[in-house]
Length: 128
Length: 365
Image (cartoon, rainbow over all chains, first blue to last red; front, side, top):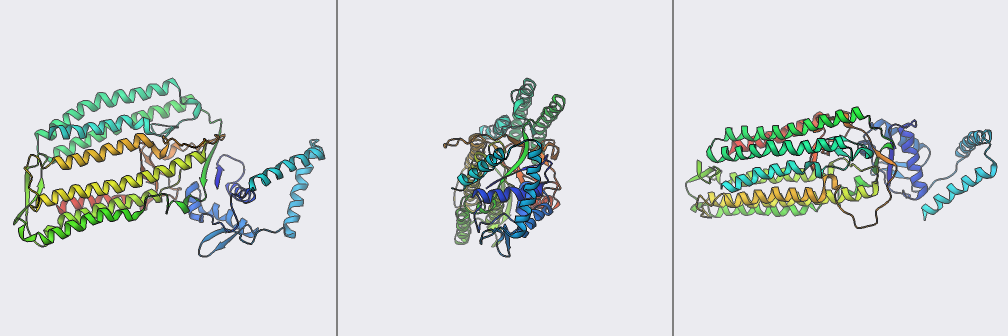
C-alpha cells in the first residue's frame, strides 16, 4: 500500500499515518493479518522520528486496528474490527460536530447523506 | 598500451558528460526543481555551461594525464593527476550546483503542488528477497577464487622461486617477492576481500532507503525495483569479471600462463574497459533510481503531489547530511547509484573502514 505524508500540512504526521492506515484497511489495500513495516523501518522510509511512528501505532493498537506480534511486529488485526460502545460514542460525537458545522453553512440533510453515500460507495468499490 | 590508457581516461570524461542526462527528472545539479521550471532558459544556460566546462577542461586534462601516465612510471605523480581530475570534475559540478541554487532562490520558484513523501508499506518486505538477484550467484566469483587456491597448491613445485609482485602500466615487472607457502596465496586473499566488498555493495542496495517519486508513485516504485535488480546483477558481473582478471594475473605470476610483457596488460585493460563501459550503458538505459526505464504497461495517472524540497540536506549537491534521517544509504543526486548519509556517525566509520581496507590491501602487496 502506498502511504503519502504531507510535511507542510496542519494535520500532525502521526494523525496522517493513522488515518491512511485505517483508510488502507477500509479500501482493502491492507488485509487482515497483513504485516506493516516495523516502527524503525517506517520511520526510516518516511524520514521521521521513531516516536512519531510509535505514537501512530500505539493509537491504532488501542483502537483495535493493529496488534503488535512479538515475532512479526505490527500486524493488521486478524480478528477483524468491531464497533465497540466507545467507538459508537466517538462516532456520534464527531458526526455531531461535522453536522453542526454543515447545518450552519446550510448544507441540507439530503446533500449531506449524498456525500456520505458517495464515500461509502467509493470504499465498497475499492474493496472489490 | 597507449590506447588503453587514453580510452580509460576518456571514458571518465564521458561519464561526466552523461551526469545531467542520467539524473532524476526533477534534480538539476543536485538541486530539486519544481516542474514548471524544467524548461527555464537560465537553467538551460547553466546546463550548457556545464558541458562547455567539462569539455574545455576535461579534454586537455585527459590528454595531459594520458601523457603523464605513459611517460613517467611514478605512481605518486599519477595519483596527483587523478586527484586533480576528480577535483576539477567535481569542482565544475559544485559550481553549477551553486548557480542553480542561486537561480532557484532568485526566481522564488513556488511549489504549487503539495510537497509529500510517498512510501510503499510492503517495500521493506519484498526488497530483501525478490527485488535483488539471488545471492547464490556469488558462488561463481567464489568458485573462481577456489580454483586459484587449488591451482596454487597443485602447481607449487613449478612456481618460480622469485615471483613478480607488481607490474607497471607497461606490463614490465618492477617488484618481486619470494615464493613461500604463504605468498602464493596473496592473490586469492586479495580476490576474497574484493569479492566481500562487492557482496557488501550488493547488500547495500537492499538496505538503502526507498525513494519514490510522489508525482507518480506506482510507476516510480516499479522503475525503482527494476533499477535495484539491474544494479544487483551488475555487481555480480563485476565481481566475476574482476576475479577472472585477477586469475589471469595470478596465473601469469606463478608461471602457469606465459605472456610476453607487451601483451600482459591487454587482458586486464580490456576487462577494466568492459566494466566502465557497462556502467555507462546501464546508467544511460536506466537513469538514476530507474528514472529512465520505460514501462510497457499503461501508465498510471500523475497525482497532484510533488516531492519534498530537501535541498538543505545536500551539501554541494554531493554529500547528504541529515542527522534526523535514520537511513544509512540513500540514492545519489550526482550520478547513478547510492551514497551514505554523512549525518550518521556509524556510517562514516564504516566508510573510513572501507577506505582503510583498500589501503591495507595496497600495502600488503
